[in-house]
Amino acid sequence: MNTNQLDHSKAEAFADRMLNILNDGALALMSSIGHRTRLFDVMSKLPPSTSEQIANAAELNERYVREWLGAMVTGRIVEYDPENITYRLPPEHAAFLIRTAAPDNIAVFAQYIPLLGTVEDQIVECFKKGEGIPYSAFGRFHEVMAEDSGQTVVAALMDSIFPLVPGLIEDLENGIEVLDVGCGSGRALNLMATSFPASRFTGYDFSEEAIATGKMAARKQGLTNLRFEIKDVTSLEVIDHFQLITAFDAIHDQVYPDRVLKEMANALDPAGRFLMQDIAASSQVHKNIDHPVGPLLYTISAMHCMTVSLAANGAGLGTMWGEEKAREMLQAAGFTKIEVKKLPHDFQNAFYIIQKN
Image (cartoon, rainbow, N blue to C red):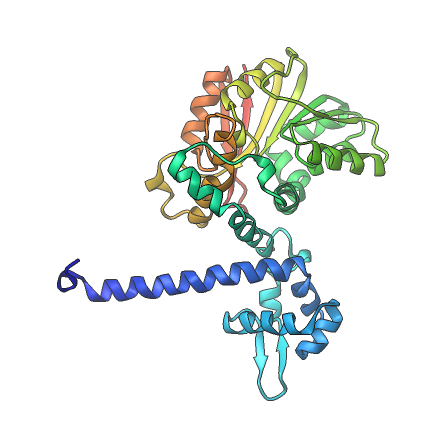
């Protein structure tokens, strides 16, 4: 490379950006730790405190807490008073870092960085050989995904998401058959079953761990209008049965999404509705350049959503399959009415309201 031909100001700006990326990547790891250890939650309730006071309050090892605080101070997340040797989490920062800040708690999403890092070696091999990595390789995925959806989808379900569908809440109150495809740990379903006792709810997922978690939560709440089942959703085996089918952030992960959508169209009552939440993005990369979390979503796609599908010789749609591809696949499955809505506070998700007729 001939350095004389470089635009040196452009090169220096890019070098600075790369240094920021390294620092921000490190802060993402430390933010995940701050969330999992509840350090952010603890600090939000403390006055300016020493590392020992913070560690005691959080019931953690002081030496590790002190080093974590060093990253938080140099990363401009925690404020430091060198005279009193005290640390403070400003309320303006806590508003995006503590559990009670949901759905604005960005620290929840920081967990994806270390989670994806656990499969980096396997992903490198996939780049060389193709194929993919199965769900079983992701130790905490269902736990993190449940927390993610819990503060984004589940928290907004009653007040924001269901009202997007005209008459849906009234139908649920009167009593209908509901299926949730890819129900995961069942947070959304348990909430629905609790809120609408006259309706009957079914949750399908292929994960034994997730289904077991959903069943346990339902038992604890004494729910009798809800059932969970481990099932391959490429074969639903019912026709015109459900008045409502939901899929929250689930279709793009499917091994054979075209078959799943076709089965869902068959299972949906002719007058029923299919509510699908998925990532708000375009199928064309150039239209995602200004997406607020575009790099993060493509990374999650390559290192989880796409690869788990490819591991089973599937379509490998990926997280960023986009609205154009979604519409194409929905129409091919037999859905004729497709409306896409978004919520003002949610830049990440799109809500598809879908009918057969």
